[in-house]
Image 1 (cartoon, rainbow, N blue to C red):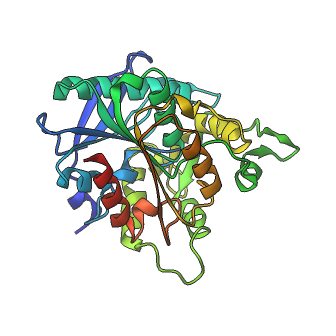
Image 2: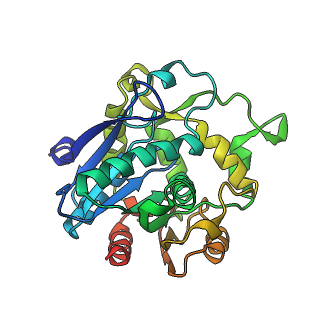
Length: 318
């Protein structure tokens, strides 16, 4: 069997209220209107595929549906199957958090209408923790019942990431060569992920890794035209991450009042313990929790201990 045999999610396409001609893609498992809905929002590189890896036991979306929820995952504009004509001709970094929250709002509105509810549970990972928290603290405050911030990024100086993002001639500013998008290859993904796993540790399943990468390449119709094959990821996120990794917040956590769970892999160098706990302490939520998964990296939800992530989040959502 191949990853395609396990690629069983339903797809919904909805019109963007913000970008003319854009149809936003929403991936779904268990999308029965009678079920309570949960929406996942991805991070900076991998789109909704990260939450629905087509391999047995690897789909967070499917695990959420099996727990009795209607599980949805959004592709932000320019990511995954949310193909954008504006993105095709853009020269500057495309799809910042300020635009992403409009896409989230469109998805939430569609899901609320489909389920005849006023609010939903929202899960955001990595850069998606910024966009979902920004949404929950501003335009979406009334529509988020519970919020899960997975691998959360808030506002802490992160020298490792600043080295990657900075102008080599002026480390105090973002590299101006970052255009609308970047190319993501299998080798680049492996290199980044391997750097977070201790030598000799067996944290990741190669078949899961291949399913994630190959499915993501297929979602970009231009991927095969690159040598090696590569899919495009919008660079607007770099502008947001530059701020966050310089210690400048993009939202005020005291304005997040819904029940909130922060969950991260214990070895994650992008979402650090100190940054996550500073965010935890600053939240306006009276009901908040912090969970750390030992022996997990930034992609803990796609590693061998992913079931621990799924179980902790499902328990919070009930």
